[in-house]
Length: 407
Image: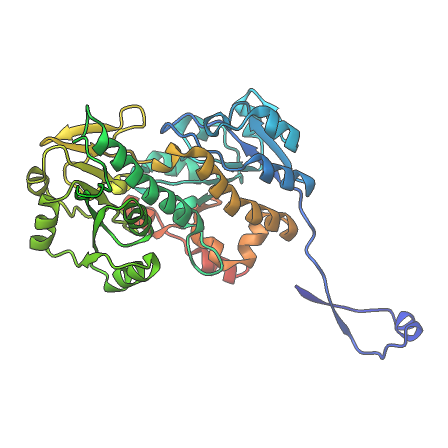
């Protein structure tokens, strides 16, 4: 930010300057952040927002980090590794929630909400379809500044955390399907890629976004026969180009899709909705026509699922059968590989936190970088997410207009 600064006339004369006002750059005052990371207790969440390497970098830059004991246990990251990196370890969640910035990998719970304090900054997933009005009203009443992983954008208007988790979910969905398909007591006891003289399994992927692309990459690399469906020709062309090999692609024509599903060994739901529930693409009748022992992995389940027969399962009990078709409908697939997922999240949050410190705080960074505002759904008592506003009939405030007005 450039600011006009008037220099005394005698000082100007002593250094040979004319009597003209000079423009010098005044850097914003750096801020020391106070960051808290609680232990997750919901959704069988095993990820953590920062790795020890990131904690060490942040602490070396003067920031304070307090963590609840065993917060990294699910990702096989010990208290000792975080302590050696400079974090404070506490047994009590209440101590963690005294921090100015709270980092979570699951949406805030009702119990955690009681520990929040006014004007606190919370960075976590939102899980839009699961949000309830009382929770939102309490968040607004405490004037929390809340950023959702799902909506945080970078300078290129991409969604870095969503993309990273989608890459993991896409790859993992095929590994899960291969495991279930080959299991003698659960699946058909066949190898996904086949061998010489034995045909490979047929994999149908619904959706050609990031999840669909990485599912296709994994399936092709394992030798499966892959068919991809999406109504966006642009996405299908991009996927074809990115994979680097020819695969079967089609728009979502019902008769063509039914035929593909009837012959499929694996079906992956990778349809994403930008707001609200994912549309149902595969009806119950279509599932009933699939081969006995075939596998459905509905990655879209966190938005309701794109198979009509899908029901939310957990990592503890991940599958159920309907019409003799195996359903895997775990809403948090990246937690299956928590160490990798934690590193991916940490890679996105660490630069953002460092920049926040250099800018004088998270709120200053939000003021400077308009793309980050897309991630904010609550700001000091105001609801700033249009979809939540429509869903719960709460007044919507355009955050960009607020900052443009100089708030």
